[in-house]
Image (cartoon, rainbow, N blue to C red; front, side):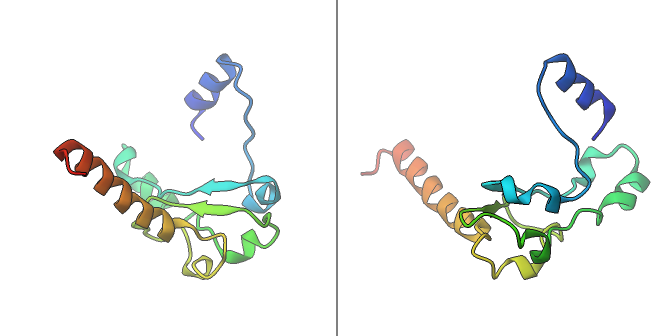
Length: 115
């Protein structure tokens, strides 16, 4: 996490914690929202190359998750969620994408005046 972000959080009295391993906190989570490391956010392409495969969620990391725990992701994924997570009940990103289709249909119908 860049220092300027943690400084902003401190200045706004927002509590946060930086952890090294997801396993240290997964048993307290209801939702984990995962996105890719975004190349376009890096000024230095070499820095992106250094970190791009650093954070990959695997099924083994989620074994102590709560029963109602869900993993969300906007899709498409690159490699930030390993495919071994796909078979877990916690993998909710495919349903999430499907729900997004219905939402877009509803929004378009409303905008077009279709009932």
